[in-house]
Amino acid sequence: MTQAAGPVEGARSVRDEDAFDVDAVATWLRDNAERDFRRDLDGTPDVKQFSGGASNLTFLLRYPAAGDRAGRDFILRTPPRGTKARGAHDMAREHRIQRQLRPVFPYVAEMVAFCDDPGVIGADFYVMERLDGIVPRADLSPSALSPGQARALCMTMVDVLVELHSVDPVAAGLDSLGKGLGYVRRQVEGWSARYRNARTEDGPSFEPAMEWLDANQPEDVANCVIHNDFKMDNLVVSRDDPTQIVGVLDWEMATLGDPLMDLGGDMAFWIEASETDLAPFRRVPTHLPGMLTRWEFVEEYCSRMGFSMSPEQWRFYEVFGLFRLAVISQQIYFRYFHKQTTNELFAIFGPAVHIVDERMTRLLWE
Image (cartoon, rainbow, N blue to C red):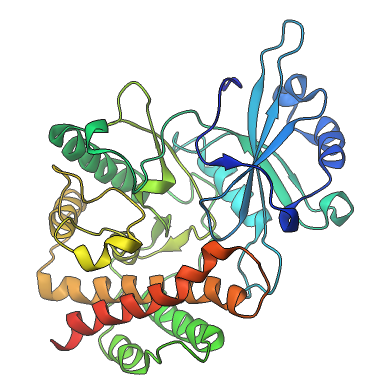
């Protein structure tokens, strides 16, 4: 049980453009939350917004202690304002995946309620418990992790990713989540279309890279539950032992698919200490002494999963992961470019797309 006590990292005042009717949410939750949580939902919560995310909006609902009831923290997730990519920001799907996974993959938060009534805040939303711990972000001090702890955290990440990819989709009730084999092809085609739809006049074309990906597709190696955004700042680690993962966040893009495509997407965020040109865009602390290199992480994962992988074979997955990162960044920047959001934090995603383009160019043609 998570108790409300002290400030929560990353929680700030709610931006005016993202505000919602807190009383309406509180009233709806008291009537519709899972029974085990209703005792903790009396009154109206204090609301803060997490500023770190760039996709779905995430809020902290802090219910104060009252009588013999301890305070509780919950998380509310809802889509952003403005135009959205087709199929993105599906709150019902995100809620269902976590609710189904929780019994077989204990790193998922408990779900509290899902709301599809537009009369409450004007959009779908769901509420879950807040997992207490530390989210490893790019500004994590080297003093927070010794080199041995940094390496141990990487190995734990491999453990948890392998555990996720080993979940039985049928046992989890998620066997209808994906579309079967052909995932690699669908991803190459789908992300290429998304980039073309989201490209702004100041964005790179990516046409040569999209042609290369289309021409060099491998067959799917498996069809399993994948997270699709398994990076350090979507993990919660224990406050007492930062090498231990207590939670995995942000299941927006989870599906059934090829696990190596999942790994490729994960490694797109893995910026090493020597890659100083990419330092301004680092979002996770993979540069700290002791952290595995990208290739070491890939080798460790493939060894545990029983996959044979050479650097040349890995190149497709690495390029795809980078391209997918560029598309996600471009979709976010598209909203800023077209003034669908006033959040200045989104402005950096335009230059980030060009940085990814340069990195892909080096991988493909230098």
